[in-house]
Length: 83
Length: 181
Image 1 (cartoon, each protein chain N blue to C red):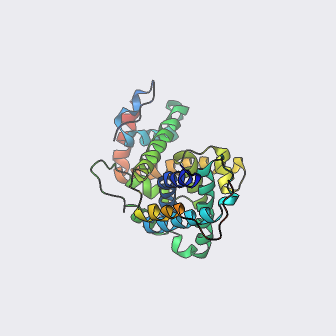
Image 2: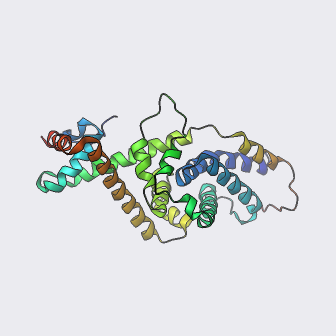
Image 3: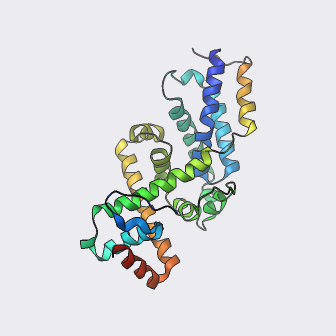
């Protein structure tokens, strides 16, 4: 797991568990916690979400959709397309 | 190129995003593909309602989302996921070597209320603006913003809790101390 890089914050270089640990630590030690800690966690969530989604986006399109849309070439009964 | 061929290409180009959204929403690849297919069929039969030049993806997402929710209402019991089987089903993704470890993340995502998950997926993953997401969901922009915010803090909480369970209290404390030292 690559640590989320945030400028000027060296504390997050320990990877995802530390990043989350930081957010927990901030609850008991608010003085040591800046608003940046939330950003670290939020950035990690965003990265995970996009990475998970990218994996789905890269899946090949099943043939059924190509076949379905291939029918668009032929005239379709009872459907008037406004152009 | 005929307009039909253009449109077909546009629809085909939209399929990966529709599938990603449908799979993430429903947690089931088969069901997601049925949703995408129904979406395309509905779109094709209502093409006269689509204003050319407007955002085709947003229109398709609106259709898919409405189909999902009307089905969801019918099948509420099946869709709810008290035992985390949504997360289990999401593991159906191909086991590629390049695959990152999203299991924690998927199971946390699965624990979100459906409206929050949907808002987060639209804004945080599908690349829609808050305004577009609000149109897709038929609600106010402020509602989307609040759902996304709640989704993010809920996820942060869930992932933190998961890590605590993984680490155990002592190791958790050490990790926290290391992290702030």
